[in-house]
Amino acid sequence: MFQPLAYEITRLATSLSEARAIAEEEARLRDTAQALWTPERLRISVQSKLKRNRLFAVSNREPYEHSYQGDSTAWRIPPSGLVTALEPVLRACDGTWVAQATGDADRETANDLGQLRVPPDHPQYKLRRVWLSKQEEGGFYFGFSNEGIWPLCHIAHTRPIFRTEDWNQYQAVNRKFAAALLEEMHGENEPFVLVQDYHFALLPRMLKESRPDARVALFWHIPWPNPEAFGICPWQQQMLDGMLGADLIGFHIQAHCNNFLATADRALESRVDQEHFAVIRRDHETRVKPFPISVAWNGEDAAMPASESSATERARLLHRLPIQAEFLGIGIDRVDYTKGIPERFRGIERLLELYPDYAEKLTFVQIGAPSRTHIKRYQDLMVEVEQEAERINRRFGTGTWSPIVFLKRQHSHEEIQPYYRAAEFCLVTSLHDGMNLVAKEYIAARQDEGGSLILSRFTGASHELPDALIVNPYDTDELAQAIHTALTMPADERQARMARMRAVVKEHNIHRWAGNLIGELAEIRLEPAKAGQPERRDSRAQNNVIRFKTAEAGRTTREIDEELGITADSVCQMLPATPPNGKLSALL
Ligand code: F6P
Image (cartoon, rainbow, N blue to C red; front, side, top):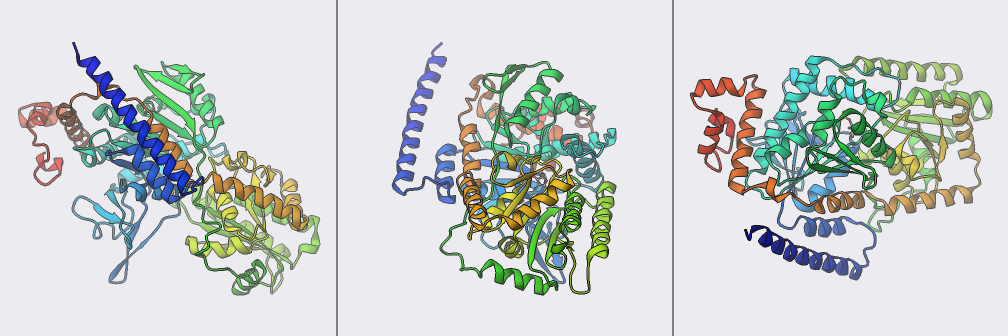
């Protein structure tokens, strides 16, 4: 009878101590004059929001990939905006990141459970790797995620392909990641979980059903289309239902949130609270909010070495290519059909037609990291990009000058910086893009307040950066004119635009994104009745780990039950809190 009262009193006391902690934190940040979000401010904020709870992140892409180089192993950071964005959060709170193992030396560099501390040169948090079979990777990553959902969510005129076998693998891999996460979360009270991206639409519900005490956020890094477009997906209801297991769903911009709410309203039995931007389904509320992702800000870092002038740097880069030119433009992308790379090459071509004076003066360098190369559409695109560059170079090039240089390999962050600093303009011409972090990286790199950003109006970034030269990438003439404008703009106007864009990126940096996301998640009120007692909860979670793992091995729970002569549920009741070698699979 007194239980509800006791709960309310405990909650009140907790709220009071939370409020005090937050006030103290704010006072501390004021004292250290940190109005700006910095790694330190994020660390303090995350720790005060998490209290004693642990943070878990899950993504398909891992932050560090090990490969063999001769007899030894080396590591690299894959080209992924998601990795750049999440890393500071994990570092700030010594969290656990669960991701797919993709390096050929990944096994050798982790323990038997696939765990290791990273960054490899300065360990600050735990990475738990999950291995997929060729078949799983084919159906889950290349198939359903990247031939289905990716073109479904981007309006770039590539048809989505939905195969039942891919969908089966997508479900199985979501279960496999759920099992790995539940193992990692075992014994942790009220954990925070940040699920990343369209690879894991089903994961929030799987987690929440096993661990109702967890606070689960899903951040969707790509656009969300209108309900008609999303309705093409034969499994739209299952996808939406899986996502709505989360307490919080984040998109980059409000328009994507609105599309999502409209889709949920149209496709599912649910109630959409338009006023509070939430969906209520099966008595569970999911908040839907925009969190525009960004980059780290070290734009005025006094510790950074004073760089050469952009003119000197430009001359050095061009000399190395080797190209004789006066003006340099830059584009940096994964080679993906959403990025509008052939469109921007045609913009350069049109510029040379309209303004022949740029011949032998302007070179555009496109850095293109090969991506998703097993998919035919990506193979075709690579051929198209190479052929377009060759065609335009044949048409205008001379012995010592080419209008386009295509550098086909992934470049590290350090290799890219000189290009950003030296280029008179950066071309971001996505046909559709959730945010586009290249646009923000270019701005962050321009400490000299030089350079112009030419930005597609179909990127999330264009909503925050009206001082860019905003273009429609399908309009080749507009693109050519924008490049001409960038090159002929009065210096003071160029500087004023860049200064304003820098102020936006400085304030709305990645630490703020992470701080806001975790802050919002911390405010979610857990439903105590559903959370249950820790012992019962842990046993339910362990039960689900078994279910997920048996399903993964292609066996039904009933088959296991029959083989054991007892039910999987009753096995779970008998399980010790921590299984013999920490692995539940050992019990099967
Ligand atoms: O833009 C969406 C996204 O999933 C990012 O989050 C990620 O950085 C990028 O695509 C890379 O894709 P992939 O992991 O398939 O190489």
